[in-house]
Length: 402
Image (cartoon, rainbow, N blue to C red; front, side, top):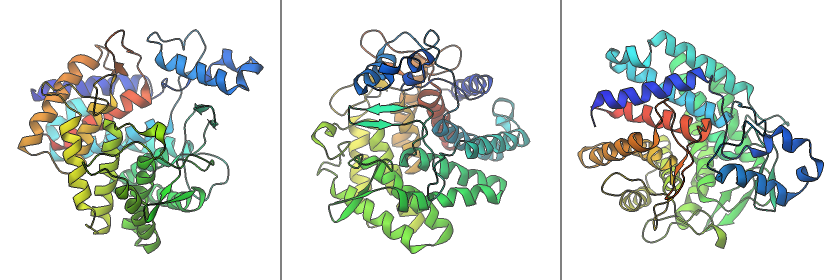
């Protein structure tokens, strides 16, 4: 793919997101409907909540305007944007020729401060042990799990806290680092731990019962690894090690990870595999402990050989293609960056997948579509899921383009 086409795609996305002030809809924000909120019997029914969330998520036509779902900031989305702008700043420092499209250094610094302050303001209230973040909507996960608005999760907290660390590295604003480091106490004190395979799994949130997901536990370990890097607190490293030991124990012989330990979580998908690899390499590089390197290489080999077609089509699952979710190509660009795999053999794959994604999933207005399906696809411009994720992913690719 020609460089100027890639730069143009990123620049168009950047303009779109800035014009929207980084606010937008989300695949799972159906319960934010002002219409739904004024009907009491719907609000208190788990089945009704599931129907509304899944209906808004699956219906290819955007119902949110008619249902009065407001565009809002999402903490994880802001964290991804913040990390992306930090990457843009570093890219411009490497090549001032990027300035016309990506922005001047002083403008990027200003944007980094704005997003960091916004992210700090979006912390979850509730007296948790440290800084933590959740989502700006109620979320029903199957009938038994209701995550009220702003319930902190280890996934969102990892992306937000590490983005603040990246902002600190550029701005040297101590407040950003202090808040980010406090997130370690949230992981240690507020999340549950479930014994598994000579270690334990961190829970997804402080709520009971959501303690079976490998990528969530590994992202908790990833955050602790970052905090260890700055503090040399051995407890952070030891707990990260125990979580990684459990999750590597759950890796299949062929290198794959199922989503979680429950029978209903037995699928193997693309971007959560990428999350797992990202967490493992972070632990290895930030602690100096390389005993899990074989798991990284085996997992990467499975990832790179099972989720991408020869023509650049990204697959959602290891055994079927559809739906093609925008996270699938986006995470490839991040994973290759994190694992330092942008060499000749994988660069060609990255270019092929990126070309396919821009050609098939970017709108003329600059935003990226949510999913491509065999029939009618969802082309709704979700800010966190699609655009923040791809903004960050493209910024990772930019750092590695030669």
